[in-house]
Length: 80
Image (cartoon, rainbow, N blue to C red; front, side, top):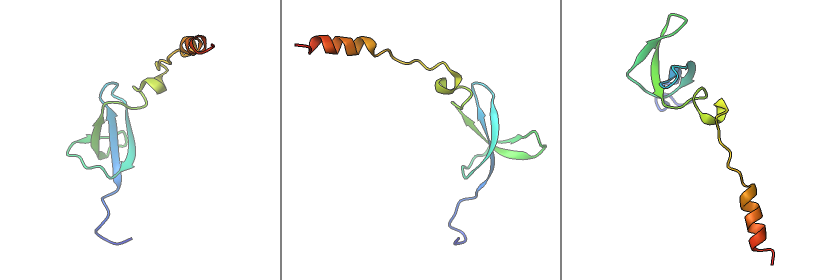
């Protein structure tokens, strides 16, 4: 790799602000906030609005639209 052209790839904590769920991962994102993690080290903190703990698809609160009525209505309309 060429030196000086790549962003700093480091460990970062992402925290869901709605559920206070946080996880440690690696990223190149830059932030000014920091947080003390479970291992005693301090890491940069990125606050996010939605994570796997609050997203409707992953929590099971996802609503699926019923298409059965629309399909039957279409078939009745164009059955001629």
